[in-house]
Figure 1: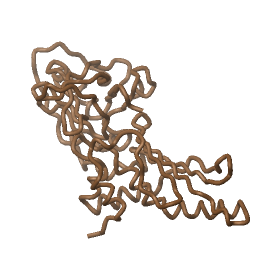
Figure 2: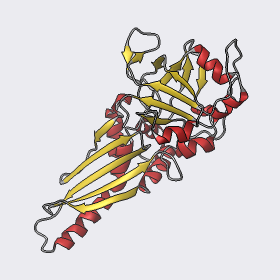
Figure 3: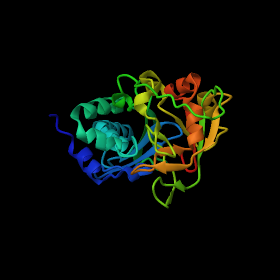
Figure 4: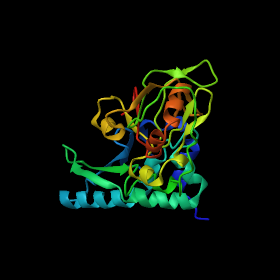
Length: 290
């Protein structure tokens, strides 16, 4: 079995699923400052590497070139460490998934190496070189691609006495602290690559295995946003979505959304609504997502 690099193994050992939000420090060699940010609204991880120029080098251009070369040498391992904190679902970070399986590690690492460099510049005092990169979750080079199922399993229809109609998508409001299923605690919902949706009787409404692999590859299960007026929300759910408030959250990491039984029936009674669920035409509005 392929050995997972020491840096990733150490990071995965220290990460819990709750360490997947915001700016995360990435272990680095002396002389480098490294910061990563999980940007759920953009569905990407950004990485900034700052390298000190060697003051003994006579030429500024030569010092800049040497620093750029050193950044490129460290980049694969730093990128992999940066994406390790991304929350996959209510039980796992991406680093934990990679640590379990060398094949998944190799596939995700290969995609991370294709990260797009967005900026390369000298600091104002010309003593440091700063490089910035973006690693997308989805799309042709999305790091979530190796996690996708080969095919979708059926979404069970759920019949019941509830008024419904065909909708263009599902818009879930989950901004405020919500009851954690089975407890008296209030917890803030958190984004994930693949959040599950349940009803209040804890019947599974949707998980990634029920979605079209092609739709998941394009944009994942749901758009994460702070504002329902975000253009990305309209693009995903259309003009006539079913709008509902989350009734709770579920999971070791509170990423799974709990809906009312009536909302679940509205979704699962008509084949048109089941079809949009399969295509991931879902947006979730979170209070603190960035």
